[in-house]
Amino acid sequence: MSIEHTDGSFRDSLATIDKRGNRLWVYPTKPSGRLHRQRVAVALALLAFLFAAPWIRVNGNPLLLFDIVHRQFFIFGLIFWPQDIYLFVLATIALAVFVILFTAAFGRLFCGWICPQTVFMEMVFRKLEYWIDGDGPRQRRLANAPWTAAKIARRALKLGIFFAISFLIGNTFLAYFIGADALLDIVTSPPTEHLTGFAFMLLFSLVFFGVFAWFREQACTLVCPYGRLQSVLLDANSIVVAYDFRRGEPRAPFSSKDSRDGKGDCIVCGACVRVCPTGIDIRNGTQLECVNCAACIDACDDIMAGVNLPPGLIRYASHEGIATGNRLRFTPRMKLYSAILTILVATLVTLLATRSSVEATVLRTAGSLIEELPDGTIRNLYTIKVTNKTARDLPIELRLQSPAGELALLGPPLEAPPQGQDESVFAIQIPGSRVPAGNALVTIGVFSNNEEIATVRTSFAGPSPRGRQ
Image (cartoon, rainbow, N blue to C red):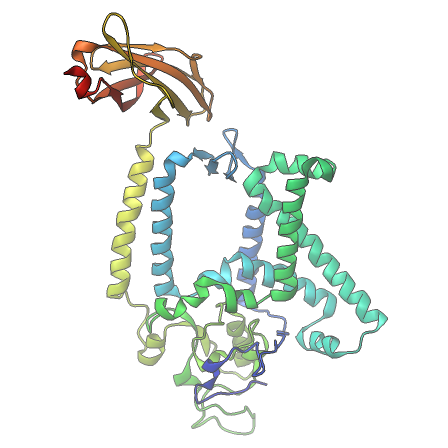
């Protein structure tokens, strides 16, 4: 049965921590219902994608890979390099604005349906717990029972399965950073051959095991920054899991012999509290701990059906909608977020569409000095690094476009492999009469198969003004 706080004192503490700071473990009742079945379907699709994505290739490239060590990032088969950092920055800003807009409109819908923490906790680990330990009340009795051989065996089985799944998650997580092939090599080789990889594999597994076996809902209520931002992102027009206080109050227990005249639809059964995975009473209003899992909606609808009252006493709705009866309103704040997001997405799409397939970086060779040849020609040495973002070999040719002079390749021929890099050294010689004092700007064309694919501008060092005098 729930503990009601009509004075708002519930906001002074967390439902999972007592007044002395001790943790209160949550043993929610097993959820069921229409929304839960839909969440299961969404979770299965997300889990399938999560575990399959590292093994999927698009045109020979990983679907998703964030290879920080080699500074290569594959997103939906497209390769990105550190030179594309401006795209990452812009995409991150656009994502942040999207999250703000989505939250202002639909609250923590993401947390309840898509967040990996909720999906794994509620759809994998919690379901295994129901299978091994039974429903919530039985779990509570088992937790309070003395340690017997049966309890130890049950705990060992549960934690063993939890660690095995955490190990699988940790391996998959690692695959997103080193690639599926490298992961397979680590898994099939002795640990001594890949000590670093094995250490990370073990570290990730222990972290996930700790989160899902012990930390659990505390990750949402104490750590998650998204949850902490709810107080500034939500307003009265945001759609959240909400209790219809106009319809539910005043609360009164149900009796088939008594009339409901003058009473609200809430029959004080406590089903919405017993099923909550974070231990809150949604009837107290929107709270930081609520992850919008909708378990209370299903539980309440089931009770309403049993007492012949209409469903929806707890539902997705805004506070303003419940108070006034109005549906989702496109507020000025949402319009502003939408306009900013539209501009960011349009800019990002334009930059992606016009993104160069080749990046060439030219720098003066470290430690080199300008040379004045016997015929009066001035020579500078350069190092060039070419990044090939395409899926084909690119033979590279350099041509000096301005000013008039000569460009001679001194290092090996440039042959940028598909999605790879190559570098070499070259010299630019310009007649001394055409070189101004100090630095001059030179333009170099980067060609492949007689097609100009990039243009690079860099400085050319001439004699100092004092030397010319």
